[in-house]
Length: 101
Image (cartoon, rainbow, N blue to C red):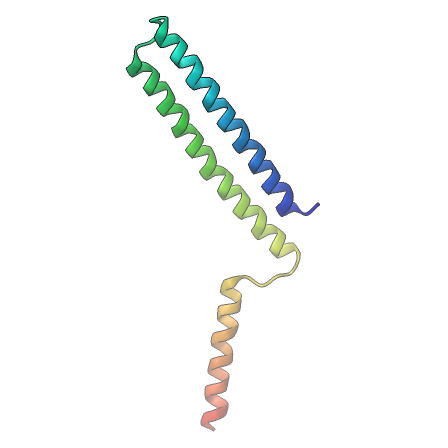
């Protein structure tokens, strides 16, 4: 199994857990509001913080996935976009010199 495939499966597993967690939290908060243990405003605030934390984790996961992909590309000896652009520019310079001479 490739590293990219493993990362994707891990991400989907985490996403499924987050959705399930959000649904369970929403149900629990609704029950607490019904029992007057929380106000609707407090329940919304708890949910907002939960979602906000999830967004932070999503950004953290994206950064980790990007770093892992970059490492894999380097380990495989693949050229980066910047390296390819530098080569293209060098080729254009050399073509200009050859055609101008």
